[in-house]
Image 1 (cartoon, rainbow, N blue to C red):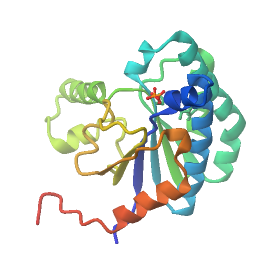
Image 2 (cartoon, rainbow, N blue to C red):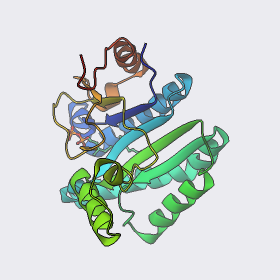
Image 3 (tube, protein in one colour):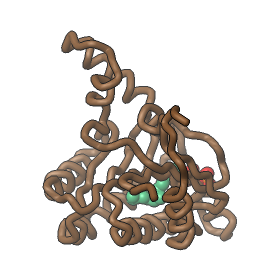
Amino acid sequence: MNPIKHVAIIMDGNGRWGIIKKKSRNYGHKQGLKTVEKIIKESLKKKIKFLTLYAFSTENWKRPKNEINYLFTLLDNFLSNKIKQLNKEKIRFFVLGKKKFNKKLNDLLNYSEKLTSSNKRLQINLALNYGSKSEIISAITNLKKKKLKINESNITNNLYTKNIPDPDILIRTGNRKRLSNFLLWQLAYSEIFFEKKLWPDFNEKDYNKILNIFKKTKRNYGKI
Ligand code: FPP
């Protein structure tokens, strides 16, 4: 049985879900946040140590202003209301990506990271303003500045994910089979699961089905 330390998720399909329900894309995001809460609870139950969620990519800035603002308001409200509870539950909150938002949100993100920094039960990495190619470029730029060798361990230790084990599992919901500039270095040996359901419809049962398949998968890492 494979142990599961780290699950990464591309939470795709909120917009389409909102439109199918004859509401708005933003309504889909609101519902998507409910799925986030379900999956956090289930990850705690399953004793998973790291949960990485792709919430906003560097490419998502190309979306309409109203959608971008809605997503950040959702995040702001979520953290303002829930960070103390997450802390009580010994959950660590960590941002992957460049924190270049308005001052209020930057402060809230920094506060949430600091408050929860010593928690060890589950670490939630929220990928925000995240792009994997620029993460790799900035790791290599750092190494050059420090006149360090460009090798595998040095690159790994200069990514946002330093000190975080690579994901065992990547899940992408929403019936699309692509990586969308997410953790390209870190996913080298992860097991990838593409899920047809849109993120707001994804539930604990779907999650457990994937975790159970993973547990029985033979991982070779290039060997036989
Ligand atoms: C992708 O769906 C989803 C996003 C870009 C945002 C993810 C946000 C949430 C799940 C809710 C907010 C989360 C937090 C932690 C505050 P899409 O909009 O690209 O869907 P589509 O493919 O149907 O257009």
